[in-house]
Length: 314
Image (cartoon, rainbow, N blue to C red):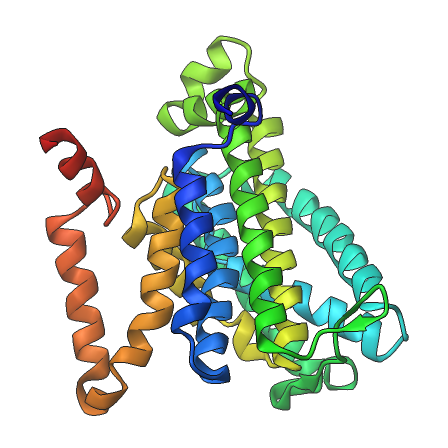
């Protein structure tokens, strides 16, 4: 069993997460709670991809909300306006987003620091403007309805089906990401995070690998955005807005940059927390901000650093 786990790089953390995901439905009493859990899983998918870009390659993006929303819109338009099957629509949407990301990566990733952040912010704003103005395709500010999702003739209508689909996607994504990080490519990405000049001096083609991880993170965001659009049955430009991109970045930072499961923890907390604060509606934003500031002050490496402390003490 140990040899099997080692061969397929099945870590204890992945096993614990799989067990936790299997137990969560026992606590979900109605569709509302299922909806929150499913949204948390899709957010976790996006943050895992964003963490590869930010935490491992050291490149910031303030446009991943826009990329997720645009991927969802493309899949919804192909299904609703052109009659393509949902699965094929998602595949085409991912291909389009990969080409778009590659086209953007070369000029944008030549920038560094806050210049790179501003450039990705500009891309996100452009996407939001297009989605708001192209009313014939996107429905404009009112958004558009999305066809039901079907797979091999089976239409997904039950909440537990969507939860299972989202959980499986997250587990497979984490397994693939862990294998990538443990590979030579992962070591190259970490070297880019430490020093691009040092990496280039030993023969690393910096532009190529920065573009590769950017495309990968955008495709992951588009996949999660497409699946969520089919799950919700509706999509609006708010899904691709600036606030959405900032929220995703905060999830990564809150959980812990450069830690795969930290991104998952951050996504779950910032998806569930607003629901827990609904009884404090007048002070919700204040409490929400205070919690984030407190974590950033006392746990600058993210919430996952708490587990590191407990492990060292143990």
